[in-house]
Amino acid sequence: MQPHWFIVGLEIFTGLFLACIAFGVIAVIYMYIVDKVQTKQAIRHNYPVIGRFRYLFEKQGEFFRQYFFAQDREELPFNRAERSWIYRAAKNIDRTISFGSTQTHDKTGTVMFLNAAFPKYDSDEHTDNILTIGAECKSPYQTSTICHISAMSFGALSRPAVTALSHGAAQAGCWLNTGEGGLSEHHLKGHCDLVFQIGTAKYGVRDENGKLDDKKLTAIAAHDNVKMFEIKLSQGAKPGKGGILPGVKVTKEIADIRGIPVGQDSISPNGHAEFNSVADIIDMICHVRNVTGKPTGIKAVLGDEQWLNDLCAEINRRGIEHAPDFFTLDSAEGGTGAAPQALMDHVGLPIKESLPIVINLFRQKGLKQRIKVIASGKMVLPSQVAWALATGADFIASARGNMFALGCIQALQCNKDTCPTGITTHNKHLQQGLDPHNKSARVANYNRSLHHDLKIIAHSCGVSEPRQLTRQHARIVTESGISISLDKFYQQY
Image 1 (cartoon, one colour):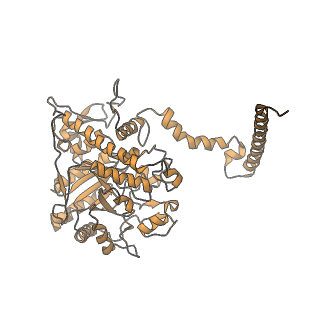
Image 2 (cartoon, one colour):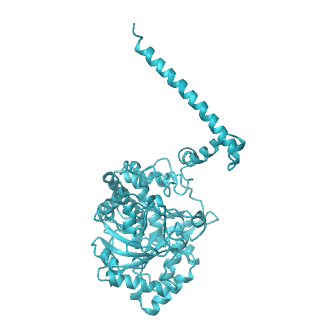
Image 3 (cartoon, helix red, strand yellow):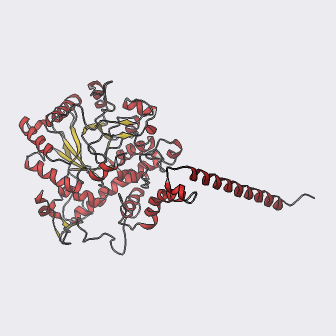
């Protein structure tokens, strides 16, 4: 008589269970011996096997804090309330909340906008002003869009991520900054407006010696989609240090675009070899602008203010036509790239302090109308954008806001090629979950929602469009817990 199938299955299951127990016992014995023999980690040596949990808990702690322990407004670099708004905006679902705000209104630095007695009707048609960047260039750039996608290189970001950003930017009508990694076919796929960034290593426009190659520069400018050129002096994640792309991310495709060896760490210099003074900066701006015929500006994190004063003095000495067409001001609060913690945590000024300094200086020197200011650095919510515009910025550029729109979960693995959402990894298995068609729609939704809610703030303050916001439209909470007008608060800068 054949045994019943259930009995056979139970015997097989029992055998496998006993085998697993035996394997587990052998593994524990092996780990015990290894832990006692090794001397590199005291915890594992003194508490074999059990000590290994310390490293497991340390690794998993950041994820548990994010979802279970941190309050809505506590987590850094972006808290749950901020990420939640972006996710809902990207999915184009309800962005309203109920039962009161979780924002602390008496916390030092909190910005509050002043609603007007006679707000502008949301139902009325309000046309945003069109701004021209580089009016004197052969090919000036015009746009009414306020919020744009900040610099993120192909290499730091994956192929599907860049493709999705390109299509999303085109749908939203904003520009996409290529980052310092060069121009790839993935940037061009969506036919969006592009800002080509020239980093210290001149990736994509360098000759065999790492110098600027005018022929390659001309070839880049020949693309109709490339609207402007940005010379990067420094960036928020690592002011005073060049870009870092780990070797595991340097594929053959990326190496060909950048002009570097495959599989080796791509570390750009911490400054342009051509720059020894502000005069050199202006010389390169003018050179790139003459070669390309397109608006050319600079990007920097503000630290020492003297160089910026010297730059303004040199511009006024030569003539205002020599000024950069735009100035991208990055915040020292870090970005997505790999960077030394010492720089990311402690070097450079945050945007809330540096932006009013730059705006005030340009106004004092009579350069504010000539140089368009682009604020970058954690500008991910409508209220943050509104603050920057009220302070005096002309445009906003956000990188991490658009990464959240792509599906970023703040896993903090951007530099390890292990991003679980496929955004900052070249692991094809991890990239499979990032569908460019779906994610491009989310990027577009996020940028449209950002503009929509920004207009709600502007209309509440009684102005027709966001760029009409001024420092008189907002107050900032001081150490006493009482707020004062932004205009009075920033007089000290």
